[in-house]
Length: 587
Image (tube, rainbow, N blue to C red; front, side):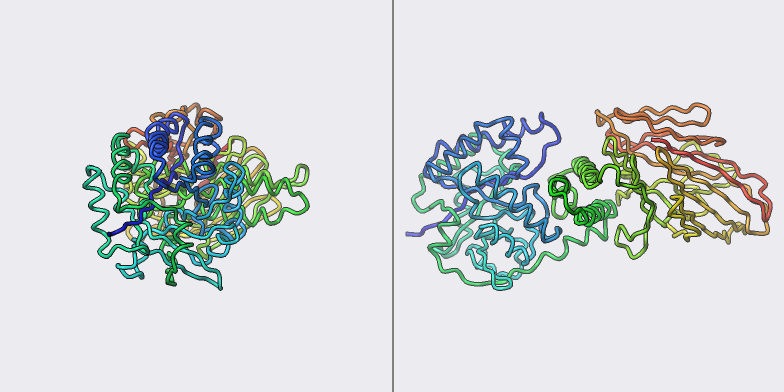
């Protein structure tokens, strides 16, 4: 008789953006799965959920915790998997954060269900062999990895668990067959036939691991789940098993798993993801400097971990299920947690606002970072532009402005400089950018002066337009004060021809809004721009702008960011003469 070992499981990973969305997912996914599992006591299963979902169940549906406890303790029907508490990409974290995230969820599960998790769920199967040590130290003996990422494992071995090793530490690996888990539209009997066909030579060491995602279950009706469980229970050749029992009964071969190298390529390819990662690295260093206050350090660390959820750091290659809006919300939430972590490290009465330079985004060039009492502002030498503006009162990064009209969905930095012919008519910001003749927003400005005490940095750019035969210098100074910062422009005609140009300064700010379909309130009074959202008003004092473009950018009727572009007329600027302007931003 041919026997087929089957591991059935559910992995609940995605974060809901609201209680309404979470409740809807509970009704469509978790409740029917657990209810049907309860009705078939002979079927063994595994489940994974994050610490965040565990907290949500405790608050909103404590009956789920009671049911899982019965399935684990009394029936021995369910095996609960561990992992990172906030569902992070574990290889991306520092060794202490890896251990902390694993231990936090392990401790929470042990307190709720009376035993430590025997196995570990690896988020998105992004693997590094150095994870074996902290996983084993957390008391877990096996992991699941998606078979598609095990390209160095022979095909015939993808239905056989194996052991792997790093620095003398061993762990068992169960390949997960995600393409089978995501099959839809199949009748239960035909689906089971498809599963059996995968294993050419059944035996006690062969196993199919079906770990359904919450989205897989959401697409199946409750009746479909019931039929699947019933057919599995009726089929005498199929035995549902727990991974922990299998690894005890089988002698597993040793194989080596390649590290998932390419996941970090997204940091080079996607600047917005790299900035979130860079902020995380900065906070790790800041928290490590906290001495003598255990509570303060623990509080900051917990906020740091909360900002490490995988959705903020993945591309579509690893995460096709979450759309751009969900990733945007997750990244903004990460920024919020990082600001909370930063504030938690500050000692009242000791913190001093500072401006310093550091290679923040790890591109080989120093950025200029202002950390203040009320806001943070980070400046990149590329375009001498503002790429992060944190208002600490409402924990919001107003510079998280993604251009969804661009195929690369690039981050829109602020205080970018554009030059358009004085006679060119532009009706909007897109026109102005399109007709820009200088093309310097991606060029690196030179640091002309850096005054740490005055909290000011000045950049210099020398430009020559071969086509029109003019040359100019731009001096751009940022000066940071308690509640506002100022940007001073000096343009010097360094050529032999008179300059006549429209000069535009692009500011792109992502405002807070309760309704995704609407943005902020934008008003212009006497060259003062007021950008209002549900939490604050940002005032931009332009003094003498000739024209001001105010626009709200949307994608599929969903608010992205607010664009502000003051336009100045630089007329009859003779060789050697200068033109000046000042912009003040008050939060």
